Length: 96
Image (cartoon, rainbow, N blue to C red; front, side, top):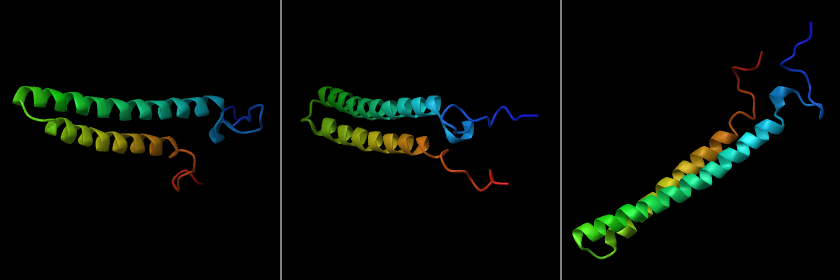
């Protein structure tokens, strides 16, 4: 009986080794990381601007909360990009 899950594709790779759809999915995750970064920075700047308008201060809160949004966006984007490559190498528990 043949094993349909590990049947090689046209390029000779097995389904566990990746393929067209897996690379497409990783590309979408990378675009999502960029969007996550940009939205974190923009949200920080908008919240800081709102605080400055409400408290009638100089652009102190916009700079502080914008910097926090930048740091948070970098952290989230880094974690998202690192998560895309975690399934490339077999884990110790997967080896038999």
